[in-house]
Length: 328
Image (cartoon, rainbow, N blue to C red; front, top):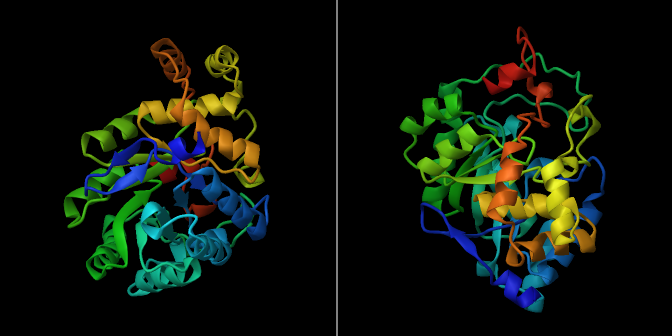
């Protein structure tokens, strides 16, 4: 079954690149060590994963790069079979910094090119790793299309240089995209956004699909292991929603598996993270068998709570009302 899974359905991006329909996230720095994450990536390659979502700020790209190098050397996978993403962090939006960020990720990941490079957040508002939710940087600023495009022009140059195959954006809104897309020489091939049964972002999802921009969904099972700073009283649990639980019982699987099935069938690319082999194997395997029915998909759609879990409040600027200002 694993050999069938890794050769399973892929999606075609607007630039013609193939991208797997499910991937593995690598953000676990608040709960798991870089070594644990890298070991999970090694296991995931063996299990058949071919899409890995990385980022410099996760603090583990060097160890993941060692895993990639070992897998290539052992013949477990060829470079062309992997789709590897990375991201420029908020403190590297300035002139020339995007190239430096990309160069470091290439060195750490031991790759000659990155398949897709994202702007991690649409503003250069830095916060210290592991800071609490009340932390504020006095230098933080609201979104500016002009500042963003200064960063994006550097992203486009990375494509011209052959260092990255495609570029994308993350944590955007319709309003922000309306401001920047007409200015882009190279359009984003994908947008990463929070997507799970309790936060389906239908307007943004449809906006991207209508423009041939692939939605990639982080927190696809509601990120129960997300940092404490991102937890708010009353946050819903995706795996406890009645429609998800009912589908899990009908298919005899864990509710988390239903969240992944729903995501793939809806058309987004989920990037669940787990260091546990039984979980990441199940997340991959479920995309190739026993699909949800139309009725189950509709029941999950109707259960949308429109509740954002990753609010980003650490990026707020002086004078902002609250975290909702980040999202227009």
